Amino acid sequence: MERDRLTADTPPIFRSRRVVTPEGVRAASLHIHDGMIRRVAAWDDVPRAVAVEDVGDLVLMPGLVDTHVHMNEPGRTEWEGFETATRAAAAGGVTTLLDMPLNSVPATTSVSGLEAKRLAARGKCAVDVGFIGGVVPGNAHEVAHLRAAGVLAFKCFLVDSGVDEFPGVHEEDLREAFPVLATLGVPLMVHAEHPAHIVTPPRDGSTSYAAYLASRPPAAERAAIEMLVRLVEWCRVPVHIVHLSSAEGIAVVRGARARGLPITAETCPHYLTFAAEEIPDGATAYKCAPPIRSAVEREALWQGLLRGDIDMVVSDHSPAPPALKDGGGDFFSAWGGIASLQLGLSAMWTAAATRGVGLVELTSWMAAGPATLVGLERRKGHIAAGRDADLVVWDPGASAVVDPAQLQHRHPVTPYAGHRLRGAVRATYLRGRLAYRDGGFTVPRGELLAAPPTSPSHG
Image 1 (cartoon, rainbow, N blue to C red):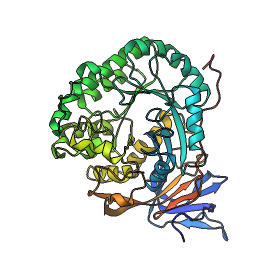
Image 2 (image 1 turned 30 degrees about the vertical axis):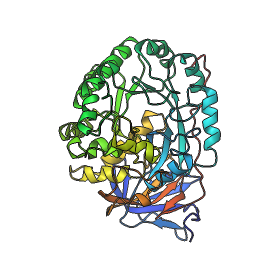
Image 3 (image 1 turned 180 degrees about the vertical axis):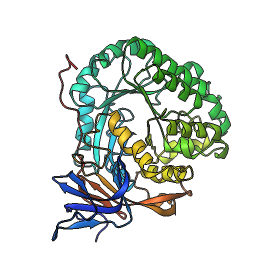
């Protein structure tokens, strides 16, 4: 069978001795019809003469949902693109992606920008893709129209985003946008670093990771979240803190939630895997913003996850061409983003297993939580009757050293290269149809997801 010519027939029944359901891991059979799970039944509830995809003792889990992915098409397709990103997702057990509104040209800050992105994505996606709208200075009048056109969430930066098409916002910009956002019922995702606490880079840059780390201290994250808390107290908008990286940030989120404010948070596998003490100077593959912090901060993030202060784990997959990502070893000129879309599940399982964390928690953080954030919980994120039959066959006992040549995203640059990770995706199914198996892909059948149409005047 050729690598890209797998068949995608839909078996009417899947079963495993280890199916991850919201109630726990158990032996079960999943009865599929028209791409949906119609029934979760006993393992031996299988009619005679019916085809069964029996994966034995391999784990059958819901497809992951990643709500933080930079696919960069159109305009910067040489950085990634829908075809390569969604193939990486399928190979990593991710069946639903949300595309961030920046790094593409045009950015998704207007309905015309959204339509350009949909046109670029059509027919290329190996998994389902939804879109996030952008909030930038001066586009508050576009926000309701973007929601009416189907975006599932919004995103803004409180600091320079790194690209001219998507400038950061100030508090006065958010005070203009918040009353509109409050009518729409979707979250505002926020890159929460306060510019007042960002240290000016050295004039000639630096290959020192310690210098880069010191330039973006936890105080920047804390101050940004404190400002957002004040805004939410003024105008009740659901705010989601992206890539939370510090104990100080967790403390502010926890305090706001204790007062009943609608604030959620995510973190990323790289913050839970790596530590600043381990990053060599000049190793710009590790550069991201906020930066990967100390082992002490890493442990605080794990405790925040386990306590429920952090709701989910997503990739923040943000690749760039090798020369741009390398930056000559200069942490201040290299592109800041971690490429990891295909590796997130294995990275999390590797770290989680040493802490006694099981598959139920992992799927809650990487499937159910993100689906709920963007209003897809009735379709995605669970193995349960009525949900899409987005399924992953997962071998938690496997392990392998990350070989960049096996990665599906466009540029095989990642800080995970050479690291041994546990677990392997054996197959990925999208609405019951095979999308990926053992290095091979079927014809792309991903859907472009959209929120139900709404009237801009009424949200």
